[in-house]
Amino acid sequence: MLNDQFGRQFNYLRLSITDVCNFSCSYCLPNGYQCDTPRNFLNKNEISTLVNAFAELGTKKVRITGGEPCLRNDVTDIIKLCKNTPGIEKVAITTNGFNLLKKIDEFAEAGLDALNVSIDSLNPNLFKLITGHDKLTLILKGIERAVELGIKDIKINAVLAKQFNKNQLKDFLAWVKHHKVTVRFIELMETGDGATFFEENHLSGQTVKAQLLAQGWLQVVRGKLNGPAEEFCHPDYDGRIGLIMPYSKDFCKSCNRLRVSALGKLHLCLFAEQGIDLRELLNEDDTAATVKAIRAAMGNKEISHELGKRLTGATTHLAMLGG
Image (cartoon, rainbow, N blue to C red; front, top):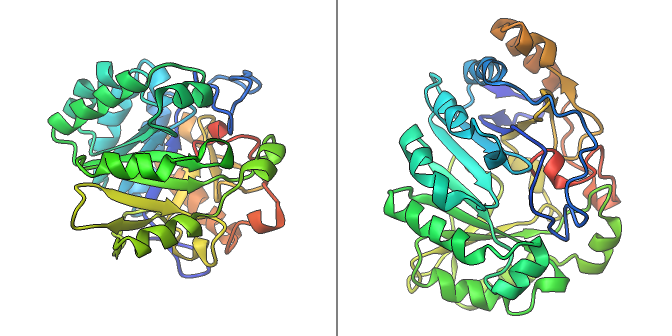
C-alpha cells in the first residue's frame, strides 16, 4: 500500500485524460476553454503503464476525469483498459454528461462501475446560464439510462454558490425523493483565475448540513474507497445527499487520492504548487521506474492544502486537473 509520512494510505487515482472542456461554467471556465497548454495528452500505452504502476502500489479505484473526458474518442477504450488492469476494483468517470445518453451503453459494456455527472441546477434556464449549454434534459435522460443499465453508484455534483443557490437544496431534495442517486453539494473552491468569483459566491456546506440534520437525515459511514464527502440518508428518500467541504477542519485527514494530469504530471494535492513529471518513464513503458518515482514523491506530500490562507497553488481552474 502507498503511504505518506502522516500515516495516510492512498488507494485512489484521479486520472485526467484531457484538460479540454466544451462547457463554460461560471465558476471554472467562464470564457470557455482557452487552449493555453500543450495538447499532447497521455496516450493509451502511457495510461496503461501508469495505471499498472498505481495498481502495483495498492490502488483499487481509478476515476477518469478532465476537463471533459468524453471529448476523447478513445474514452471507452480507456475505461476498459483501467477495468482490465489487475488490482483495479472500481472504475469511475466524472463528466458534464453532454453525450452521456449516446455513450453510456458502451461505457457500461466496458466495465464502468461508477458515474459522476456535474449538474449545478435542475432548473433548465439556470443550468444554461451556468454552463452556457441547454442540455439538462438530455443529460437527465443519460442518467436514467445509466440506472436502467444497472450502474448503481451514480452521483450528481453540484457546486454551492450564492449566485445560483436559490432553491437548490429544495429542488434536489425533491429529485432524490424518488431517484436512487446521490447529490453531492461541493463548496466552491478558490482557484488562481477565480478569486473574484470565489469572494462573491462562496458558501459553507455547514449550513446545508445543519438543514439536513434538522430534517432527520442521518450521516452514513464512509466506505474505504470513497473520497472525503460526508453522505446522508433518510428513510423517506430513495437517494442520498453528500457534502464536500474542503474548508472544514481536518478535511485532508482522510485523504486517500492522488492525481495525474493529462500531460503525465503527478499532483500530490489538487492545490499543489507543481506537478512531478512522469511522462518520460511512461513513454518508455517503464512500470518499475514509475512505481519508484511515485513512492519517492510521497515524501513531499503535505498534511493539508492551504485554501484557508487563500493559497491555491498551480491550479488556475479546475478543468486543468479534474477537480
